[in-house]
Length: 256
Picture 1 (tube, rainbow, N blue to C red):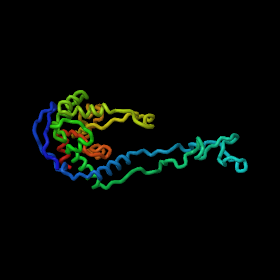
Picture 2: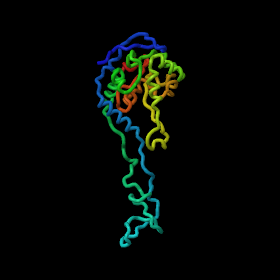
Picture 3: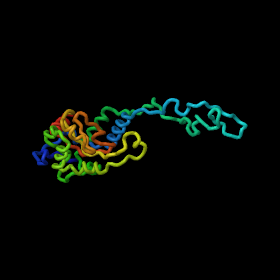
Picture 4: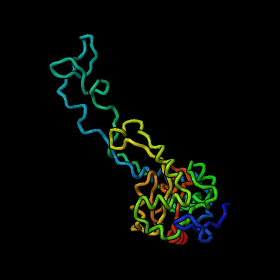
């Protein structure tokens, strides 16, 4: 059981007061339910794909038949090069993916709700947050609660100054230093780099100024209270993300 009392910090890192966390932060820890909900959510985002219709079979072909001491494969008409068959270079694929395939996974409504509550409760557990590799000052109480003036911060530099004064700059630096080139074909498809997830900033509304101010920080994401889901709170299905709430956002979470 985690401590139910947390500090409320100012934009300069001072402790303004203490307050109790809403009851949702006492939800039972269920990593299995969290992982299942995250996998389903990622599966539902997948885009159907398949090779182009007619790929590998756009030739005029014929087979020589038997009796010539060669394989009885289809060959380009007027030549001897094999074509179209799956075992030939440049031929069609034997069992290609189909756009008709349904990638979506279903999760019960109560199960999905439990996953969200459990992932939210994990953000208040120091050991789970450290296990994800996040870096922050030891004396900070989790989740980090900041006064509502944070929602009015507009520039990226000002947001970084606030995070530095509170003691969260190390996690942003960790994400920036670990940016690397992606392995595999993704480099050719517009996603050449991989970047670790850093902290999550939760605000009370989607039109808060800090949404634009913080989105350019490496690995930092901004979400509003009603839009929280297991994928944001536990990226990759691993719970314990370093999370920052404004007071107004925490109040909305307490109304769940």
